[in-house]
Image (cartoon, rainbow, N blue to C red; front, side):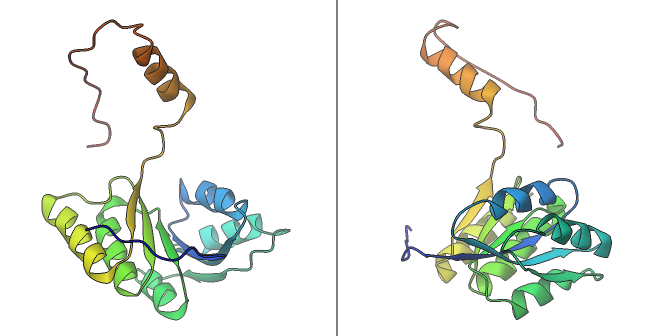
Length: 171
């Protein structure tokens, strides 16, 4: 089932997870015209404060959430968000994405969006029912090496490719 919505002049974003990858995501989002970072959330208060400080000098003035395992629910419940960006440990991806879609927000979730086939279907069914997009954010398919390799393959550098494999990392 496909769906679309009207374009938004301003996209109100909440980010959950400010550990390893989250601060970089916040920094990138802060530079996109039309994005308003409304909320930041992490289990560890110092990570939220540090990330908020990185937004000093920008027009972004997010509300800050931390200190409890379910602070992210409070953020979603209290804020009017168009997009929830999830950058947390894997076991939280599906529950957070489902909760955000149920609350009316679209979701961008780092890989993997789900760990089981059941979770995959939960995301699909919730997205279809709520008419909210849920996008898994692959983060390296457009880096230099990947694009160069694709170009080489298209130019026939490797000959006729019959089969390819790569490492399955972090599983």
